Amino acid sequence: MRNAEKDSVGAVFQKEETVRYVSIWTNKEGGEFLVSLRVVPAGREGKTVYGRTLRHGEEVDPDEGVLVRAGERFVFREGDLTIDARAVDELYNPEERGGYRPISNTVWTWHHFTSERRSFFLFIFALAKRLDATHTSWVAALEIRDRAREEKGISRRRLHLSELAAAEATVVPLGRCYSMIRTLVRQHCPELHMPETVARTFGAVCEMRNAFEHIDERAEGKLKVGRKTVIDPDAFTIFDQPDFIGSGILRYKAFQLNFESDVLAALIECRGLVLAAIRARVRARARLD
Image 1 (tube, rainbow, N blue to C red):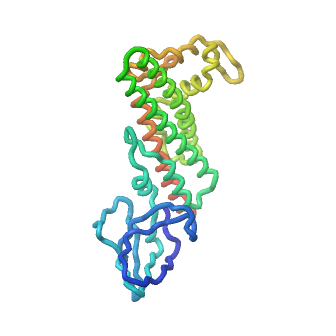
Image 2 (image 1 turned 90 degrees about the horizontal axis):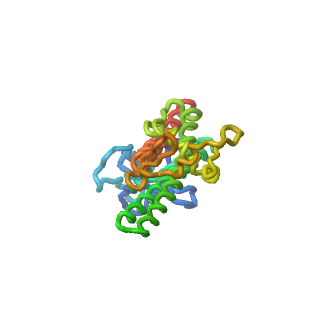
Image 3 (image 1 turned 90 degrees about the vertical axis):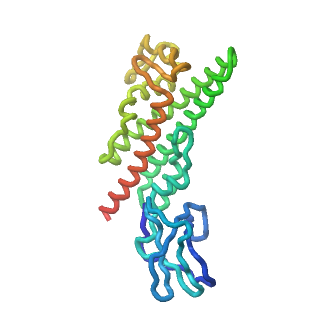
C-alpha cells in the first residue's frame, strides 16, 4: 500500500526488548489506531537495529522478532515499512455469511497511507459502504428465510413476507453498487474489467432496483421512460414473485435473479474489484512519481 519515504528515526531503548509488531496511528500524538504490522529483523549497524514489515503472503516463525538491546535504536530503512491493502483486508475483516468480508475499513485505512485525491477516496469509500450494507441486508433476508422454514401457517407466511421485504431492501443498494462499479471501470480504472456476475446480471439488478425504488409507480402500472411516465402492463410483475419463497428467484418482466447465489457472487467479485482498484491506483501514482 505504501512504503516509508525515508529512514525512520526510532527512540533509544532503555532495556532489552524483542519487537514483533509495530502499531500505526493517525497522528504522532496517538489519535485513532489504524493497523498493527508484523516486524522481522533486517540487519544491524553499530547501535542501530533495523527491522522490516512482512511482505504480503510471507510467512515467519511466530517467535521471531527484532532483538533490541538497551542503548540501541530501532529503525526502518526506506522501503522497509510497507502496508499492503490485502494484508489489512485479511487481518481485520473476518469472513461473514457466504464468505464475504466487509471492505469499508480496508478502504478507510488505505486512505490514511496514500496521497490519493479526496474525490476518488470518497467515491470508492461510498462504494465500499454500500457493498457492506448490501451484504448486511442479504444476510438479514436469509436469516428470516431460515426462521420461516421452521414455522407453519400464518407465522410462516408473515416471515416470508418479511424475507421478501428484506430482499427488496438488498436489491436497491446493490443496483447502486452496480452503477458505481461501471463508473469505476470506465472512468477511474480502465485497465480493470466488469466482474463476470455483475456483467451477467446487470440488466436484471438495475431493472429490479428501479422497480423496487419506485414501487408506488409500479403499483399503478407506471414507469418512467426518459422524462415521460408511461403505462406498462409488465410493471405489475414486480409484485408477482411465485418462485422466491421456494427457490429464491426474484423476477421482473423477462429478468430473473437468484437472490442467494447471484447476489453473493456479485458482492464478493465487487469487493475484489475494489482491492484491485486500490492496487492499480497505487501503481499508477508510482509511475507518475
